[in-house]
Length: 355
Image (cartoon, rainbow, N blue to C red):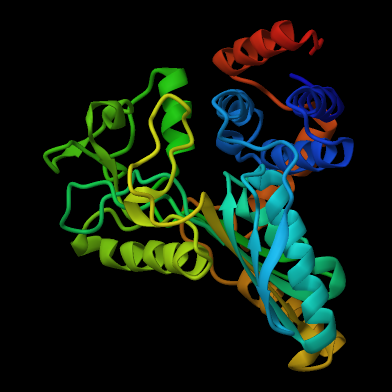
């Protein structure tokens, strides 16, 4: 176990060694560690060495000149100048929140960015302003559309955070694939098989081999197959890709740059970097905030009272498991799988940082 403070300080030092300004290094560490706190281990410090390798390959700019290239009172398009998505996305969300404060809603599409961590972090930024937050991003093409064997889409997550009065906020944060690639990576480290419905072979057959992607296989859309609704997951992933990239001028579909540095960037790129889409909606642009939040509490309390199936303990509200995990890990520490711990130790040796 490592404490949040230990991992935060270590991660911040790594970003400083990459050349990030102090404020950006702190922000990047905060976003990355939020994933570990919330139990999304696939997107936390386990990804740190991946960012370092991208930086070493010249694919991350540690000191980006982020700028708005187009805007209206309620919208903006941001050029992230190749910066860390962990830094670009929160700053873009700040723009959305500022616009929402002025005109009711704010929408920001981002191009020329990189992997931005968990979508939930960015959506939750809006909560303290009595706003609903929305965040999504496209990602490396690892997911095959329904009826295809080609890897055309990313796991393309969507997050929505909704404020409440006395109840914990509603926070939905999910990939539009049956499982995020990071979950496969965790299974690889544990040397375990993947559940049926997560991946397919390069020929399109079902597979439980957690290393299937390395042999040309693909992740499956949410729903796994047509009978179980994979066409809906495919549609959701497509919407994220279009909002994040076609709208902003980032790369989309099979042209999205891979997160791993050893894979080459596609030829004849159609845009710049990875794309994000962030939104903020002021609750009182629709109805009085206190009134809305009281009804959100009622909504949550009502769903918590729903009859529970045999063998289950309770009906969960989106955000419950992550909130409970955060409380637990702040008290007891954050566990690291041995391969992740070794990875961080190697980074520490390279940069002269003690974990």
